[in-house]
Amino acid sequence: MLLHDMVIILSRPQEAGNVGAVCRAMKNMGLSQLRIVSAAPLDPEVIRARAVHAEAVWEQAQWYRSLPQATADCSLVVGATRRRGQRRKARTFSPEALGEYLRNRPGKAALVFGNERTGLEAEELAVCNLASHIPADPAFPSLNLSHAVRSTPIPCSEPWGLRLRYPGNGQAWTRPGLPAWCNRLLTPWRLWGSINSPDGKRKNSFSGMCLPGQASPCGKRPTWGTSSPRPPGWGGTACTTNPASLGLIPREPYRSNKKLQMRYVWFMLMYMAENFTVLDLLDINVKEHNALNLQCLGGRKGLARKISIPDLNRPGLALSGFYDSFAYERIQLFGRGEVAYLKKLAAEGETDTIKYLFSYPIPCCIFSHHLTPDQNFFEAAEQAHCPILQTDLNTTEFHARLMRVLSDIFAPRQSVHGVLVEVYGLGILLLGDSGVGKSETALELIKHGHRLVADDVVDMHCVNGNILIGAGANKIVGHHMEIRGLGIINITHLFGVGAIRERKEVQLVVMLEEWDSRKNYDRLGTDDKYIEFLGVRIPKLEIPVKPGRNIPIIVETAAMNERLKKMGYNAAKEFNQNILKWIESDPARSVYFGTEDVI
Image 1 (tube, rainbow, N blue to C red):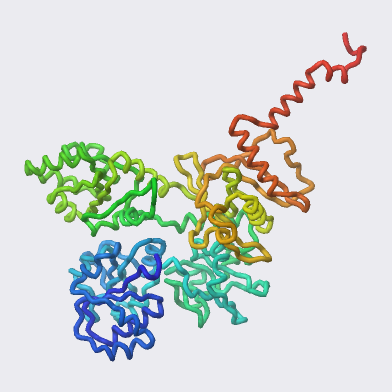
Image 2 (image 1 turned 180 degrees about the vertical axis):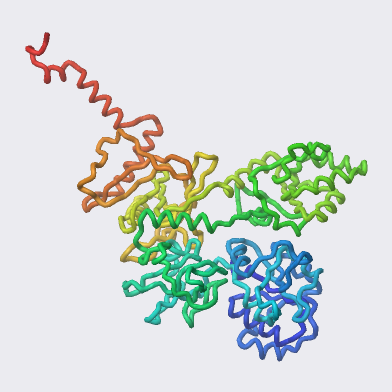
């Protein structure tokens, strides 16, 4: 989510000074869209006096008569409330959890704040999909309106204005230096640790490492320097724990080893989104052959329902009254046959069947062929808070597309430290210790006309149980490379869009390692070696690196040789068979056997 997608809505504000303070808080946070609903008469001069350099937010504010009108163009509406209970929202987020929930979500989202004295009423909260609860002292839980707005973490995917202060020297790096860290430590960008200063000298860790809302091992939350703005969702007193001493990340992040890679993989798997909701399904940005063309017709209150199984169900038998082995936990897909039966039930007045269908916790119902259910179905779905979606695709095509999308989303994932390139149409994953020359090899391959998929952090997921797809772990900094001595380069701008691609199947792993004279390297290639990721075995080559060896040429040759193997031709095995045939031939025996040896 970007900053311009975030909307702040004030419902029934009474004090002009509070509105001005909210404008200033929004300006501090980089937000500009303010909407005001059913406000009392407000003094513009008081608002401008309290806004102080944020008058533009007030002047561009939009006014509405009702909250549904103000949220009509928002795909998600979150109500901020200090009260929690059965009469409030069933799904309530802390500010930190809300920021994580919205961070990578596309589309416009609204954050609604109620009246200064009464907060959000039950009718206003009913318009919201989710609720956010700001923790406070139970003895005095009420917050000032501007303080409540400022306490909300910014769930944007742009780490704007981020400054990391180095302890002791007062220097700070701003956003231009961010992409290298995103590749190495900021994916997910909550992971932090010790860093290298611009002068090349190693500095101690500046804060320690812990998650938003969680304490570090020393019992304190992290701080980011007295004059540096904290990242969204972070705060608290200084944390003196050095994560390197805990074995979480190394003191020098540019040096890597297998243990570090495994820890990084563990963090990537741990912090992935665990809940995939109906709203996530609506917000999926798939195009061309996988476009779903979904829109929500009703049941908006249930958009936060979780989709836990990547499969569909046709509820024809359930509509007829047979509920044995009813797969209610799956998405229910209604085609022309199901809609025709619904019309028959409506004509006969059989509404109990529809109500009984929604007694099950169905994630959502999707109607294909641009079909629309009758009013009885809508009312039952609204009462059960079950989302009703619609697509213009035919049932068979939509089923195939959605299964491809869900298989990709629910596929097991793993992230590794390496470089993924496409060489002669073959996806090659370059692995090895940090500094061995993976990025330099990939750069030379790109210069030869091949394509880069991901550098430094490769996110892999298994599709259909036997296909390993690799892609960049962070789209914001994707297709950037860090070359020691040169810095960060943008491959797209340097070599054009023909030098990159978004994803590629991993078909060969090349392990680069420093030349070891005591190790016996394979010189024939008759013995195949494999490495396993997510249960998929991938052919592996170990290539020693030392001065004078042209590694890019070797990788290109390995790619062509692997393609020949897939076509059924193995040069090493053919060479071995030819040698055996030659040994068994008469000229070869005459060399080794004399006349006196013949009986």
